[in-house]
Length: 262
Image (cartoon, rainbow, N blue to C red; front, top):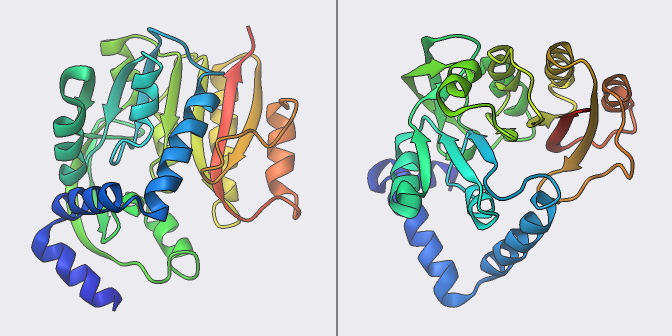
């Protein structure tokens, strides 16, 4: 069945399938549609704690823009960075000139690298290590059967063009540490996706690099798409590192948030 789905996507195209699914869910008010409506409400409440009107927000790994809707609803200025053509087509058609769209990837330096494209656009990645670690179990039914060369630029270069943002959201399927290596400017707030237990070391790399840029930071995290912080009180960078290394830490995908203490 999975091979049939992959074949259909290759013929029809990811963009067309995504649009078709959206319309079906909207028309029939499916469970998925209702869950998405609730997610958007939760997302709005969550991010309203962190960003405000006219803030500049970078969405690195925008995919089909489920965070962009929230950022625009909060009247922020959105810079979306997404390398996959099908996703970019959707973002252009959906959001138009309400966002600045960079149709490139973000990495440690300006270069061209191979991106491994999955039949599920949300898990396409530049990281061979991440793909190898998750396809054993977490995404064992998925395939990465195509590679394309993509131009990468750094976060520093994006900041040079658009100014220092109030928030940088990074969701790039195991490539987060490489993206963060291209950041050498203090940032008010940054989030990056983690994958535990497969990529604990990479998450620690991200925390340490951000701490090295900022004199003082505090951390929190959210599980999956929960849109809520798991810690009642923010913790130090060391506290966050100890937490994700603890065997009791949930084995899941989520986001770590790191904010500069002013």
